[in-house]
Image (tube, rainbow, N blue to C red):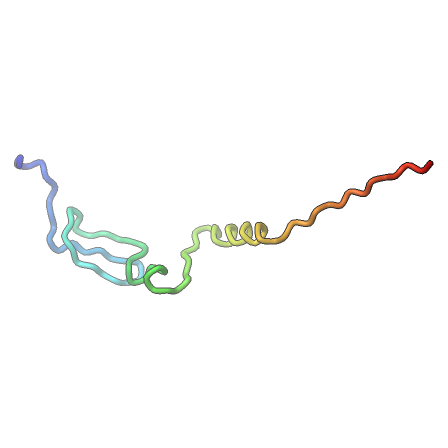
Length: 83
């Protein structure tokens, strides 16, 4: 390996999650912040909890509700010729 081209490796790097969980691992970055980890991720916990940023979840749910509603067909009334 070439000398002085590789980044500094930290054997006790700390990854901090928004939920308060901390993971100690090896990395080239000493401290990291993450929003979701395996402890608080909905897939692993079985909870349905969504992190909403700027109302996007509500907008999506409103669009999904519109898509589920049955569409009504307009009935055309044909005029008949009277003889």
